[in-house]
Length: 133
Image 1 (cartoon, rainbow, N blue to C red):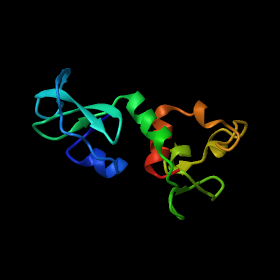
Image 2: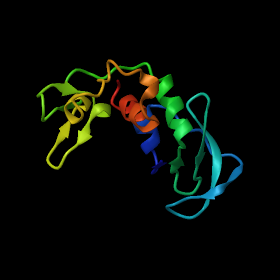
Image 3: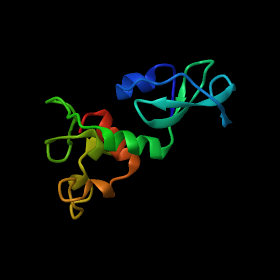
């Protein structure tokens, strides 16, 4: 996932270190070579020294989600179109008009409380982390 300048720091609350040695990837914004960097204390990522963007792989997002201990403030998330309950964004299933929770999208499927967190996708855990779940 690509983050433009300072977006990764705003999204995660972690500081991105100055880029070091070059990697094989190029920046999708300015085409400069990406360099090794560190997000927070120990998550290795790739960053662009030219435009200050950062590239995080799925394992980086997973590490961020696992490291997070913060909780969402009250009132965050979405209101399910099906049942009317406030649910975390990571549970949202898009419809043509709104979001529904996992239980309303597939009534026989286990809810997030019944499903172990490890079985959720990396992206779902990352969205949950961003929203403070």
